[in-house]
Length: 66
Image: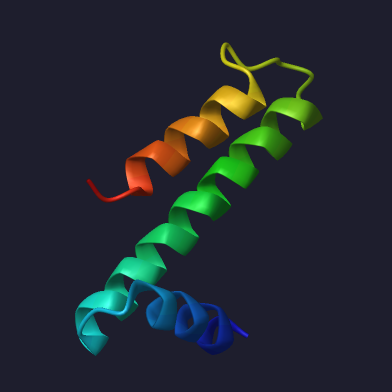
């Protein structure tokens, strides 16, 4: 499964293969980490200081190349 995810991201990133694959893994890890934080917050009934949309926007803005 991860090969398909990383392959799709790698093709989208359109860089040289090793660097694009590394970037794909980093993006996937960041998204999984954010999803983990949301689940942990919900399961502990401990609301996050920032809204989900603010955190998602922050991640997207970090990933957008200038």
